[in-house]
Image (cartoon, rainbow, N blue to C red; front, side, top):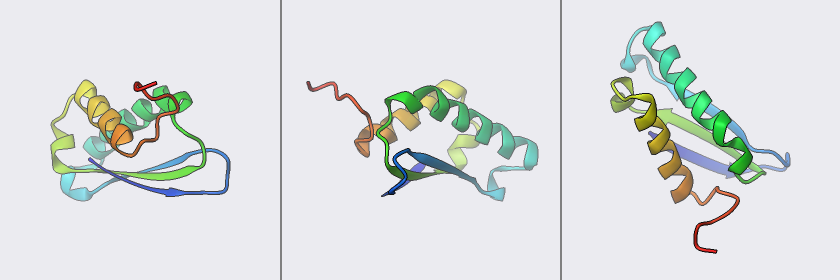
Length: 89
C-alpha cells in the first residue's frame, strides 16, 4: 500500500481509499476497501488530527489477509509519524 498525506485546516483527519480495477472485479475491490476502512476506523482515535490521507492499495493487497493489511497500514502511519503518542516517550 501507499500513503499520501497533506495537512488540512479541518481539525480532524480525513482518509480516502483508492483501489484500482487491476486488483479485480468490484466484489474483490470492495472487500479490500472494507478491510482498509475498518483498519483505519479502529485506529482513528490514535491518529493525529489535521491531516488528509489517501491510502492506495497495490496488487499485493488483493491476496493479503486482514492482519497483513492492518500491519501494513500501521507501518505506513508509523513512517508518516501520524500516531498521537510515540513509543519513544
